[in-house]
Image (tube, rainbow, N blue to C red; front, side, top):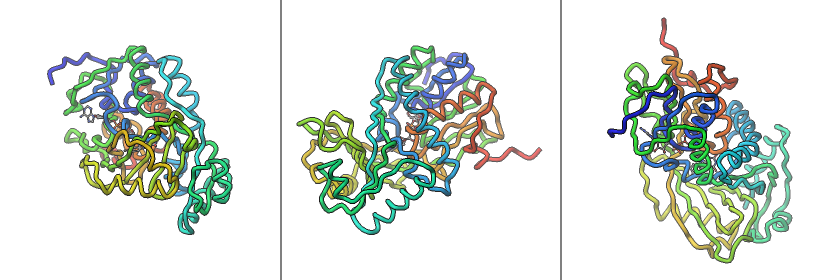
Length: 364
Ligand SMILES: Cc1cc2nc3c(=O)[nH]c(=O)nc-3n(C[C@H](O)[C@H](O)[C@H](O)COP(=O)(O)OP(=O)(O)OC[C@H]3O[C@@H](n4cnc5c(N)ncnc54)[C@H](O)[C@@H]3O)c2cc1C
C-alpha cells in the first residue's frame, strides 16, 4: 500500500467501533489522530453485531472486573448516543425496549433463575414471571414457554448506525480517516503512540520484542430478517438458550448467533442457519414467516478470560491495546473510548482490564 501517512500523535490500527470511538475521544482531547483501516470502516465484527447492551448476560460474579466495566458502559450509553446524534447528526438506533429472558424447560429455567439471582444481588431491576404473563407482554411468544424474566434496563443499538455515526463524528472532529491501509509493522508507523484496535486480528501484532496479546477469532453466524407487514411481531429483545432476537422497531429483526471456534473460516453454513431458526421458532413461531434479508458471519475478538485488554503495553508504553472485547464490544464502546483517551492524555484510567494480565514488564 503506497498511501503516504501523515505524522500524527496517535495512529489507531483498525476502524471498527472500538478504534473509531477511541480516535474520536482522543481527538477531543486535542491530539492529532489517524485511523488506519485495511478495508472499509466497520467491516469487521462491528458490522455483524446484534447491538444488545446486555451487561450481565455473559458475565457472572466470577468475572467481576468485566461486569463492572459492562455496567458502567451500559450506564454511559444513553448520553453517548445523544452526543453522537448531536455532533454527527446520525441516530444510532438506541431503543429503550428492554429484554425478556425466556426458558422452555426446567434446565433453561435454572439458567434464567441464576441470571435473575445474579442481577438481584447486583441491585438491578428484574421481574420473574410465568410464560402466560410473558405472553401478555409479547403475544406472539409460544404458549409452551415455562418461565420468563423481564430485564427492563437491557436495551439495544444498531451497530451499523453506530459505525456511521462514529465515522461522521471523527470526520467532523478532524480525525484523519484512512481506508484501504493494512498495517504490518507497528514500529514503522509515523506516530508517537499506536492504539491497536484490530479486533480479532489484534493477536497478529508484536515486533519481536513484544509478542502479541492473545486474541483469537470466535466465529458468529447470524441473520437479518424483515417483516414485510411492518413492526409488531415482538417489541422487546428476546434472549433464550441458543440465541437471541433483536427487533429494530420498524419490522427488521436480527437473529443471532452461533459461537464457533473455527479460526477465520467465514462460511455461512446450512447447519448454522438451521439451528438459529429452529431455536428461535420454538420461542417465537411467527419468525418463520419473515423474509430473510442477509446472512452474516463475524469474528468476536476473544481473550483467554473473555475480558478486553485496554491500556498501555507494560513492555512498550508507545503501544496501547484496545482489543479483545469478545461478545461485548458494542456495549463497551463508551468506556473503552474514554479509558483509551485518558491513557493517551497521560491521565491513566481506573480499571482492571489492563494488558499486564497477559504480558509482563521485562525484568530490569
Ligand atoms: C455475531 C456477533 C454478534 C455480536 N453481538 C454483540 C452484541 O449484541 N453486543 C455487543 O456489545 N457486542 C456484540 N458483538 C461483539 C462486537 O461485535 C465486538 O466485540 C466489536 O465489534 C469489536 O469491535 P472492534 O472494533 O474491536 O473490532 P472489529 O469491528 O472487528 O474491527 C477491527 C477492524 O480492524 C481492521 N484491521 C484488522 N487488521 C488490520 C490491519 N493489520 N491494518 C488495518 N486494519 C486492520 C479490520 O478490518 C476491522 O475493520 C457481536 C459479535 C458478533 C460476531
